[in-house]
Length: 389
Image 1 (cartoon, rainbow, N blue to C red):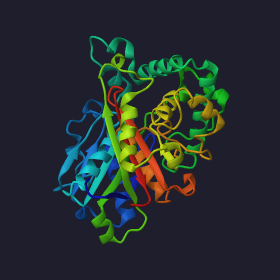
Image 2: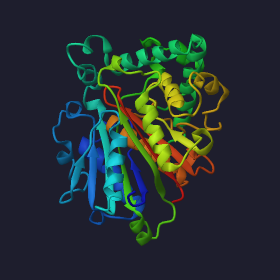
Image 3: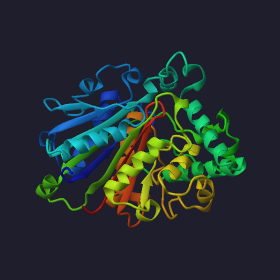
């Protein structure tokens, strides 16, 4: 076991279509905010972890060097971590291990993306191999619509019930986004609006899908020694981490019982000493770019039994006032600057256990799970944080 590590500060940009700033200034906005919150300066940190989607998304090679000035990282060691959609949680893991190893006491993690200056769908459609997958996957919506159908057929789920549950998730997350000052999409929608929105790739409709967002997130990770030195009381201790990957080819692994998701969660639960996640977690920030996929994660993470998610969603089990509130920030469904998205999940989990989440705070939250998914649908990462060491 390494040293105890805590998240001591979080900085986010206002996410959305940020054509008011250039890309480096967007990154700088998040970094300045985390330093302002903590009262620390760039001179205090030992290193920086940076990450985005792969460089083809940015049109900029070696982005960690390009943004070094914006991250106030000149003269500091910089590590670059990229795992596509799971980049954000991979950045968090890299910063955690850097500090836990004893090689640093204070590390800044920064995730960022300016998606409206690129073509994310073109990137995600062409990233697949050109001989087998590219012709039928059609980017992320194609992959995850097939996964959704695989799951619903596997458990013989009623199509209308699944559709209603996905619509319920969309409505509740879009409502929650109004209480998050940094969220991108803030619209009131009804169940009927979601169910009649135009089809993207069946059964996924427009309001089941996350947006293209510009944004950045910065998180400070500190050793227990640094926490004591700074005299901090409200921090988020890292209690468990887990990361798993599986086959690159979409059809070569089971996506209904997603083994990388199951394994990543179990690794984190074992480290955190969690036996019954639905009872022992107070809140979860699940990576939810698609409503249908969020229900698969509920099952893979042990929040409920296989095939049970739609019924529990419709009962309100995972709503903000339910037994295990999921994505009270609005989640990825409402805010998705991909390189930052997974780190935002960790940041939001940390804010919950530090009692700093503002209007979307879950009362009494002490333990929170954050998650991100990436690669070409093969990576899953988890970080669990708690208010007590």
